[in-house]
Length: 258
Image (cartoon, rainbow, N blue to C red; front, top):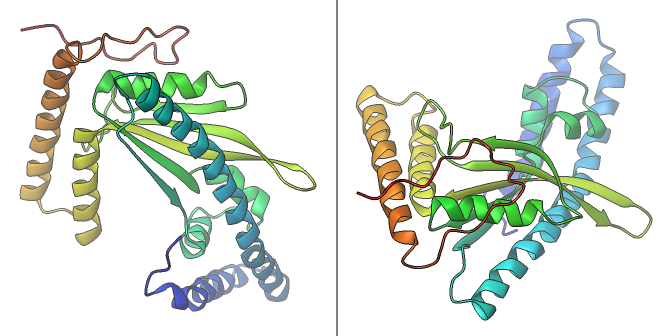
């Protein structure tokens, strides 16, 4: 991944966070020397950990790109519009590990942090989001660990998306790593809304002024309505896909005409 201007400062910032956590734990009776050694070892292992998760992204991304290219070359329509990947930085990973507390071992961190690696897939239509999820879930070497359907049940702030945690085998020279990867599958309208909401929340440190919160709430309703209207037009482009053995028993029915 391309370095950002602040990347050179990451080790210093991470060390500051680790030192602060060490001091905090030391005040409640922990052995400072043993704690410092444990945190140092965890920091050194993060490079290897991130490598494994990058390989996990590569494995799942290959599957997504194969589906995308198959549809583009063999059919007249592809449900996959855009694909982006994300891998937590060392700083972000250490910060979340400290914030979520628990043991500072790589194994413990992997068990409680499930969004280290992520792939975001953008589709034109709501039904395509479910369709892509079904195609990936049907692949024998992908194990679906969790499903969170924020399309059928949006978050309180209006966020809508389909989230899956899948586990993929990564074959290394001496062993196989089972790596979890988060999939976020959403429509273009959902992605646009989520991007704006994220930027505003970051700017105002998640304390949005009431007038902006009201605007976002209204925009979420407009995006939902747009998705419903576009879904009614989908049949003119391609018939609705057939979902067999669906993971999404709760998924919304296609909107009625009129």
